[in-house]
Length: 503
Image (cartoon, rainbow, N blue to C red):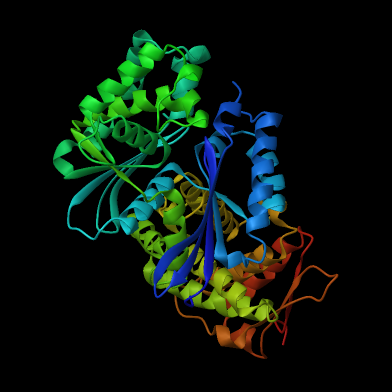
């Protein structure tokens, strides 16, 4: 990516939406603009985990203002990520459909551990380089992420359903602040976070850092009140002092402390209770506020995605394939064949877009047999299930779902993918993958250069495969499978024709 390129990250958090715009200068990201709006979307989830119309409208209004700042940005310059509230919301597609139209860019709903990974990337890139083992805590509106890492590498990542908005609503009803409410909130937080005693034990890290809203507000308040040994440092004594001050205030709307802004007052008690619980649980004596956050991690991740060697998704795919003992040589044969055919099926597609689709095909080829480790029968279904339910670093949830759909569809009937039939690019990927698996059925390198594939001209929906004279006689099993594939595609709006099998 060229120096001078502008990049933007949008963080759709449970409490606030944030927009960070930076310029790439000599390999470093320099902030140009930062915008934050308190949307408190997490408070708009009802008992059935559906976003209220008001909560959706608040989010859309904010994104409309962000869209004005993003005018002129190309798709590859913007990454928008959504976190716990939209992970939970049963009607998230209703919100996202409108939100993406308003913003003008795709919005990736990311899994909890992927959120944790990006948070660590943001924090690590804004801290001085060090060999220390870092514990990073991020208390969001409806989730809390805990990460242990060294340098730029996150080694232990977890996400828990406990946050400032959720805990304030649940344990401080009507904004009433009391010692009893704090005790209950802290005990409840530790009950959820107990697992961290094993994964984030005190012996596994050297220094504790806190990221984002709750930690930033607490750190700022303690420093301004003279209750911190240095700016940005949070101690147990400081947390005790702040709890006492809030209890004396009695109500959240009556809080008047420098460092706690008006929009933070309704959720500070829940966030403080969670933070105190973490201090107790992990034996933290002091924590340093870190300026890096999820949005910064998303920016640096965009840079890493530019090259396959630095794209964490590629290494994640390799680890997952190795975990399930997938045949790497067969995967490479299928990948090369599928990519060759896809280029033929989409000859006018822009090279950058074609490269993205080919990379997705390569990942799918590497993973298409992972389900066989569970059972060979219906292994494509097992593989799709794994991808839809696994935490795979680097991938948004919709990206993994697309790979799962390709794995599911690489063999068997096609009607199971009916919802995708209107997606021309997906169907081309699917056709290339199915043909590649077919041609590589003997687990040997096929003579795929002789096979020609084209996409039928609009308004027709379909694909045509042409083989040279004598091909069917030289490869009788492949010819038989091609005839069966023609039948499979007859049950879709697309269709497949094969020329040359009777020569």
